[in-house]
Length: 393
Image (cartoon, rainbow, N blue to C red; front, side, top):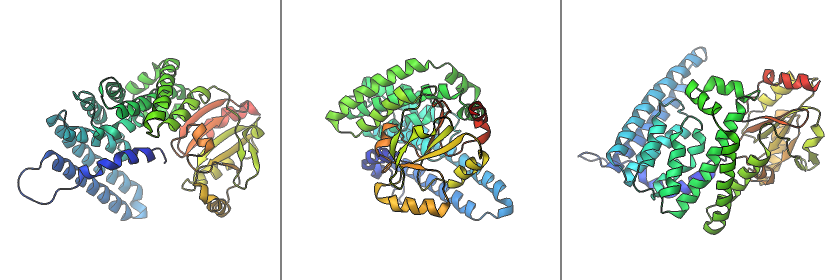
């Protein structure tokens, strides 16, 4: 996942804030208390992974479920402690860091059902009287990953834009708000998509589904465009390295919505031969942005299910520019039969233009060349594609 590369660059200066304190007597200070919470969270992760490694095959599924629930309960308890710490230290770096940790734990640690704790953290951040502290940077960057379950993230970003005196933070928040609004518009569109629609209906509760259904997608896209255009202009002066992702997102907003014709994609394949996406017009296409860390078996299974039907799996490989030979070896070893565009790295021309920030990502394009779905992840259910396939036959 290249989505977080710029996050960790921005986050690096803050890394020393959460180091575990040296043993000693007396109550922990706020920084020490947060460091203790972080250390306990790391210990819980280690315990979870150790428990998984020790499971036997015959009890694996039940064991994973039990270990996951135990880890989740522990993490929620730690989040509650961090939120209490944030409430005890409103407006200072310790409180900001504690609330930000809850956000990062939710977004990066695989804890998705947190009972509104992520919203509570963003509410605490937005309510701070001063929003100039760089301790908030991770919370800014992670906001659009919490669409649509965390509406307070939008309020937080708007608060930073309107009240922060830190120009860099304002530009970062403006960029993420553009991403957030664009993703909300896509969530609305995905409800009617063949793969994403059923998945979202299953994943989201009724409150979140109603929120997605009520979205005015064109209005959000218009605001997102204006925000991101401003980010591109400001980044030319500030040098925050967000101008390029913002430009990619602008292209995505304008050209890659569900229901729009897929733009022509011209390049070369892994072996250097010329390659056009339009070669597959007349077939249903899954355009998969992948790397060698992806699972090729999913593609094999999809092709097997669609054998003899008007269907094509087309890849865009995002491995590093110097790893072309490694990718060729991987394709040969794994028996990958479908062609892929060579992107020349995750920030290459194709993924940059298409606004790809998460790997893998897949687009579903019908036989007439219209985008019918887009999703983050590798799993594409063949059954969901059958109506499109039947229409092409």
